[in-house]
Image 1 (cartoon, rainbow, N blue to C red):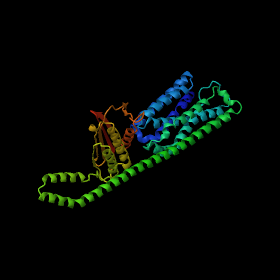
Image 2: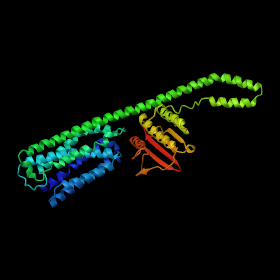
Image 3: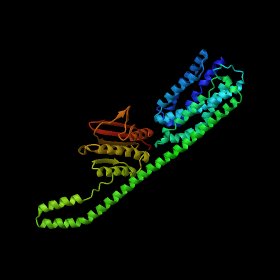
Image 4: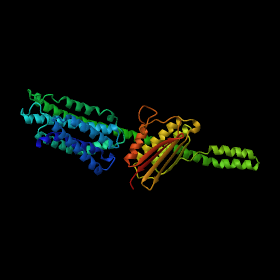
Length: 440
């Protein structure tokens, strides 16, 4: 009976590996942790125990069963998260690489424990190795729990999508391949000369090297995210600066208009006394055209006011009709940077679509307001010409191949705040609605 535990223990290491993968992404689960564990843990126990007993019954090696269970666990992991495939896939591959290195160490430990006693055709670890293998895997989970739940989690939750996510997946695949390549075809090969000692050193070196590369990746990604955040903040500062300059110009025009008002009244009075009614109408019409547009203030919140004002000025410069209704207080219950990024992305997309639309049909309408003091609602509508490319519910970019980055960013921000967003288009009008959930 104890012999049947050997293949089972070789497969149960999938469970601590799956737990480790979930540690940095707890806030992105599609369902509560307790509910997820109620069905996921029994499922993984059934797969690992059932797979181990099947291998024992048929005297099969556990490698194919381990690969199949790992694929099933990875698919479940990716499907139970809200984050992108780049992030979830890279995390899953990194965890697999770490446990592949631990598997190589377990293989070396098993060979050292057996010392020629095990038969050459042995397909499983001995019971002692299996117990130690699982203990080391759970110990690795405990050691990696803190950095995964702090440094890695902070980077994953950062909305500034680091470009390193697009390339880092290559590294864990290389380490997985190296560990698979190191598996000897014949167990007795490890007892030839100093191969066993070298195998132990190489396995340990690969594990340490992988940990070092992951640490470097975290440092690089956090640095890139920090730089992206600074660029974003600088962009909003430039918006506010331009907005400030526009306000100064409008205030100066208003002062000049008030100064000239006395002269206008004198001229109108003179024309009235002489009965030149047509000249009065013409003069008043010309004076009205020269009165500056003082509708330069949208709401009390400076961030929203700056973003709307910035794109309003761009729209007016391009001859695109722009209507905005904003009712936000100075303090809002959501993060101002998140709100500004979502609003700026929607207005930028609306402006770009309007510039590709026939001038007679151009129109942008925006609404931003609070509901029940905890929900911030954003709605942006714009006319468009042509067709909108949508694939699997994801809008495709019109500027480059692939998904639209702006819409993806808005989705992530809405999900991050436990809110929601919807995008619809019909009769030549594209409508985006975003709900962001905040605190009191």
